[in-house]
Image (cartoon, rainbow, N blue to C red):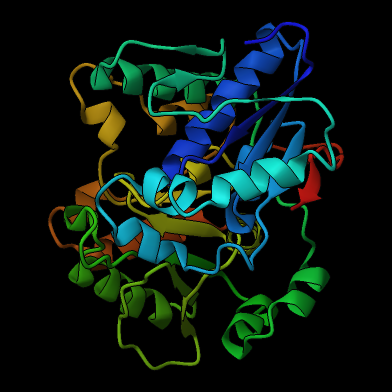
Length: 341
């Protein structure tokens, strides 16, 4: 790294979206421990605020990349090479950035490049993931969380979908279920239909509005005024805003951007084990970390493993109205400046 240049530019690596969360934790630690450079991240619009700790976000022109990211994720080879480098997208982005930043050093980040110290680590996947989860744990403990800056009125104006408007206008309790149903990618982590279907049906009977979000989602084939499913391409901040307007959110803790929502101020209903906690060499629980800073979640695993969905719903309904979140005296807009390429 050139010590004389003050602007460093890195890129979203077109890999798993969870990796953007880990990269954000690296940037957080760099800012906390070193902080002698300005960091810009080249990223797709839908993921820009996953890099909330950067100084600038260079958002890729949608005319340059108009592919749905779910299509990218279904490609199981080197996504960065195919969609970012070989396509010429990288060159376009770097060239355009010179209009905003006359002088900068560009670093194409790879799997084992650590932005917290701008060094490449040993290619050991287990040690790398252990480092990433511990970085994220530290970011959460220091309450550097993903925040929602979209108020309900703005959200209603932005979301021109009738089912979403029904959800936002509903005065009773609301739960979001985040489902996934990929055809090729990590299908072992796809949502289990019996769990979500039975949970949703019983929650609806309790007059709780259920919003099923996914990209791609698992359809539950439920027709009810208190149920809506939305297979979306929303930005992360839009989905986070919808989640913050719910009493709680159900999601797998094994995949599907769980790390991003675990690093936010929403309440989560836990239905399965955390991959990072179950790994015998990593053993990091983000649920335990959230509890330490005052965010309350609901663990219904003991009911789900026995297919006792009535018991699960009764248990969570008792807790749903009194879940604690972090109280912030004021929410100052500390989002990075956005540069549109």
